[in-house]
Length: 273
Image (tube, rainbow, N blue to C red; front, side, top):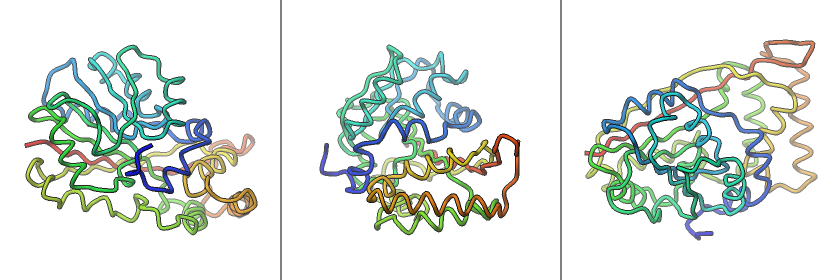
């Protein structure tokens, strides 16, 4: 794996990727449609997915009616061998290939891509200027980069805020999305020379949640994965205590233990000049 990968990501996503694939939510159709509408080129389209992980975003894209017949080829690039292994098992479309690479070393030829998409990953980028230069090199004229994240919405439920406060104590200095460090990319020389000012959109939605979903989603986070078994068990016990207090918990079906899990999708579109 490349040494340009953050240590917490390298260790946390090196194993346990079946849990990651099972626990993390997929991507909302309105966000996928927005990405499609932002592309000026006509199909069939060439797509590069950076930090493709286990294929959660890839599968959503391939299943979406706005995208299913629009893709000519999708090249999924992921530094973690463990994640690529799960990806290869879960994504079998013949238009899709997967390879090792990073944000600034994609191995994709000049001017190949209509779209570069980075789902749930760009906050791990170690060098924003080099990455933006690579994006500009790989994209066709008028191509776009789509940065997308699914986020638990701590502002719409007290229990989610308490959950985030508890698990964020273990972040170990990792550059998580909420810190906004990734925004520095848009001020780099490579970005400003090659891209229009970024466009941002946020969508609110509700997912069904259960005790198991909340626990597994927390345990799939890289900085929780690297904890000792004892510390990870303490996190699980704290999560269960938070859920038992039921502060801001809205039931979908209490008899089945299903409640509302508030989420947001955050999407940034960068258009090449």
